[in-house]
Length: 181
Image 1: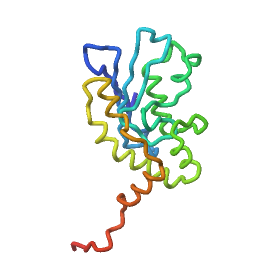
Image 2: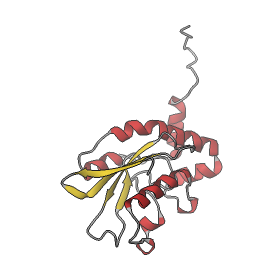
Image 3: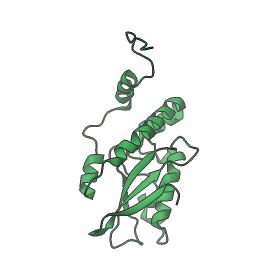
Image 4: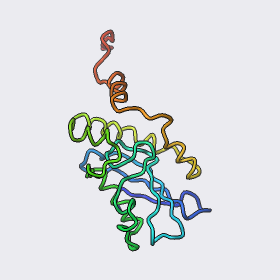
């Protein structure tokens, strides 16, 4: 599928896969590059793989700490069908990026912002997209190393994050900066 690449993380273990998903064209997510890991077990196709983002986007349906996407068929084994393929899983995740389901939000800050401050949500998504290629390039050698890199050291409230971001990520020049021209 366009914008989706997959491969085993290493040749010694075909139960752990790495996927790269590009943000869907003509959406806020276009240009984003998001790395995910999928861990299968011997029960696949009867149960879904464990999936998490290594490059965690700011999104209502992606846990901001673990990177686990919230999709009904990944969360509820009763909704999983044995004919769901790897491509189906990844295409669903790619489509989820531009079509958040707010009733299933696992990132409450992103969901609240999506509802109440669409402009601010849009800006944080664009920031997430701009940062994604750099974060996606960081290559763990194992699934455990990837999990450690994906997890945050401490949880920060959205208000604190936004306040810090607003203070340093501005397009306005500093008051004392001079025009070099």
